[in-house]
Image (cartoon, rainbow, N blue to C red; front, side):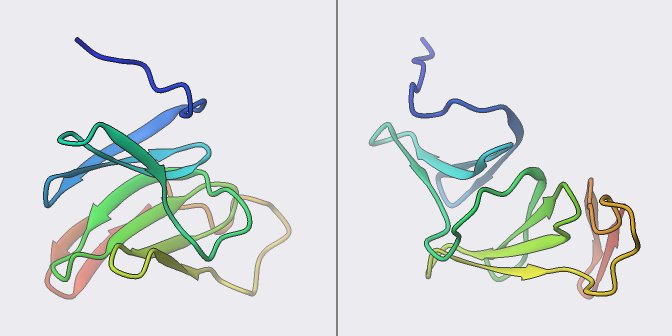
Length: 115
């Protein structure tokens, strides 16, 4: 039986699993759920605003890449430190979706494709 989480009042856009944790990319940021303790927590101690997450991808070091909406580019989330690094082109064109990343694909060890 699936139980609702009243604290998760948002739209889940992507789900990823890593090391027994389930990560939820939403229109209100990144959440993590661990089935054994039934807990749900918002991630990213260094953020003052919510990120709209389009896609999630873990790399070989265990960091989580987040494709961001609304011209925010990409974020690299480190689960060990609970912090994000945001990557965004500072030479934005005059339309808001220039830095929006909808999806990505890990093609090889040193190549990722962004769309």
